Length: 376
Image (cartoon, rainbow, N blue to C red; front, side, top):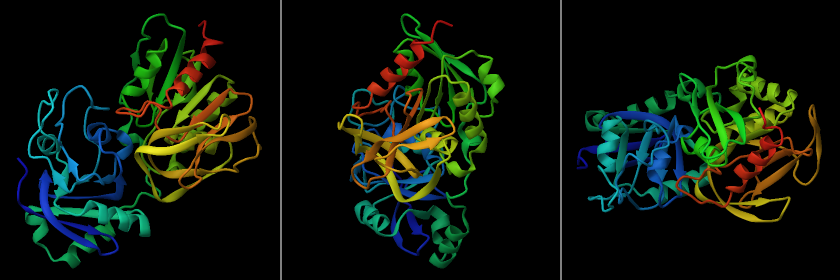
């Protein structure tokens, strides 16, 4: 059951909200971000991309379906903190094995309930994402000025290199389901478990490797293609991942990147990245495929983006390239591709657990690309 111990949320600009402890009791710091999804909170919590972030849920009721052992996207909860308005008092789903509150306590995630999350979201939309602290129990008894000072002394997301925190310690393999059409290497920058599953469903055997691998390690696996996953942190710090992307592009084998992988692809093409004001998160972001005109509803979690010219081709060390997808809310670049079709990326999550699935065709596209040279 949710504790009624007092809790305080303090933003780095001094805005303060009072509520009750939810999950573990203590204190935590991170980047305050909001998620607009009404469902799929378990997948959000266990997505390594949220490492270092305090997630504010705009939907007022959270925890209704409890948690189970089937839906996590990794072995643990990654969010730095959790903010909800009205936590469900019961878990009313036949698949529930325990409550969300119990799960947060199990993983030591400090949260707060009873605050106006929509007002908080509107504030972040006006002033941008910022650092935040949640304090509960004895930690909340200190003067607000002291809490604010602690928040302002905590690290920010710009310049954060978090890949080593979330990548796999050892390589592992997900076997193709049915007939194998190709073998690919997935560079784990914070990969979700559903991603290699989506590739395995399309006949790809997936070797998931730690981000610390060098290009010779990857080449030794003789892949038909290389995939670069989602992940947390500032892409400007990910020089090693860019080196791996460069190796794949120079080897002229198919490349597919998502989210953080899109930013790494952009950097390898010679583009720059920048911090978004408040980022894109949740499962209802509209993105247009510029090659077809189709609009897709997509799942996002990114606070950085690639700076690239929209509507015109541009030169790269690997041939001509273009922006393939844009967000219809703010025209942010959401996809890149080489004109020859050998490499492409998107800024969102086509594996989309718990949905939507408008972008599943991207895995089909990658499967087709690797299958053409996939007799290894």
